[in-house]
Length: 320
Image (spheres, rainbow, N blue to C red):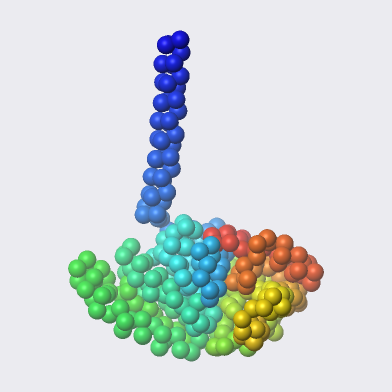
């Protein structure tokens, strides 16, 4: 009997030790993943990573708007919202790697992560400026960020011997019709209409594949034209029916809710836009309100769009 008890206790202790060791190893791996050096990520074909899929409102499950376009070793960003540095790491992309940020507009949700991206990547270190491309006003925004951080940047550069160029933006303000190509990745911009500020959408092309990324705003014929025949379209979606339901339930300030809905693309409108464009895949981001279940959005959009529909989450990878 005593031997049986001793054996049982030994087994329990062994199991407990194994459990503790497993938990400890898992915890160590989680910590290491957050600080380990990342090699530059390379993409065999044009790829889209939805680094952040949220919008202007806080949401611990969705970072602010940020979309990566990758081809080969070239990585660029469309918008830089809240948590962009952490989002890049979670996507296994070094924060120093994106060489260009394309802004869809200067709305705060698209820009609040710019200084984080710039100055966190600088510590890698990054030795060259980050190219910042956007509508008129982008230069003033970049200069304001530079001035705000200038004393701290100078102090850290001197203390750590970091290259000053890595903490700067190289700004280019663009308008409708602008285009460029570098390292096999082509990009073209189109001005959209109806947003609170000047707004742009971007079409990226590489090796015969194409992806279009648009920002927030009402459905636009310019996006239809830009996305014509594209393999993939990344676009916002607003569940306008939920606004009326909220108002019927007694929501405060119904006028503001309706005015906000008018500033965005509804589910029906984005479906019609994608169908008119003839895109193969529609990737929905900046969802308002975020759905409890994907079918709440995909079912409605699928009524008017015959292609593939995806509700993007932070870190999702798409290959057009």
